Amino acid sequence: MIKKGLLVSFEGIEGSGKGTQINLLTAVLKENKIPCQVIREPGTTSLGKQIREILLHRQSHICIMSELLLFLAARKQLIEEKLVPELSHRQVIILDRYTDSTLAYQGTALPLELIESLHEKAEIRLKADLTFYLKIDYQLSLKRQKQRNEKQDFFEQKKQDYFNAVLNNYQKIADREPERFKVIEADQDLTSVHQQVLKIWQKYEKNF
Ligand code: Z5A
Image (cartoon, rainbow, N blue to C red; front, side, top):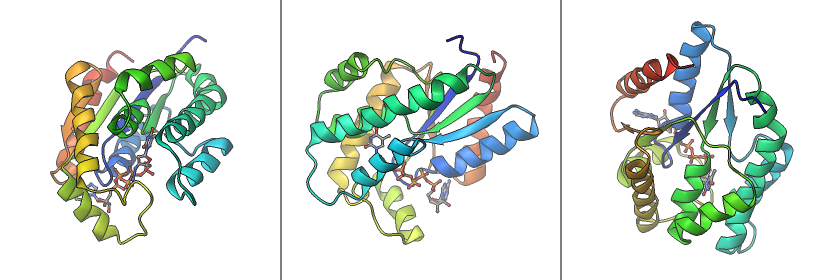
């Protein structure tokens, strides 16, 4: 495949504002006539939707390795069915979560090296070109979740220790890959967070 598109992902714990900031960035791209689309992981392909339902609203125990393999199955399908064909066009594909989520979340129970080697074995090699990590702490995540007052899914029911481990894993990625994985302080108001995203995007856009 000749890759003409750009893969931009958003990461962060629940309520960090991924959906909100994706909408704001998409509006700017559209205003500037830059073709773009948003993809949610898992959940964009038909298989992905089914896997999302199994994982988020599980009816029985799923062991951690099966959980990991299900996320990978959804990702593999997404790459084959959607990302590879779409990236052959010049456009920005914005991913609401991608491989870093797996390292951060499933990495709370499994070694990061194992997760990376399974990606490699499954030939999931397509990496995000640019990632915005919306960094907030657990207390703020909880507060925003409560404001929404929605029924909690499997991951949202997890406790503080779990989310601190997720945050720790995100930090490891930030330390390891500062060029790609951009940390945004997301405990500020919507507009300030958007300005930070735009500043990074505008620098990056020049190479696109
Ligand atoms: N998961 C995994 O374990 N492994 C994997 O490989 C992958 C995923 C891919 C999918 O959740 C779950 O799957 C996820 C990890 C796991 N765990 N959970 N839970 P998801 O992606 O469907 O949902 P989410 O991450 O939980 O998204 P979210 O709760 O919708 O959060 P968000 O998109 O980051 O936030 P938002 O919807 O933009 O904002 C949340 C609320 O806060 C909303 O009312 C906003 O108006 C408000 N908000 C946003 N920004 C601000 C600011 N700056 N100030 C004040 N209020 C704000």
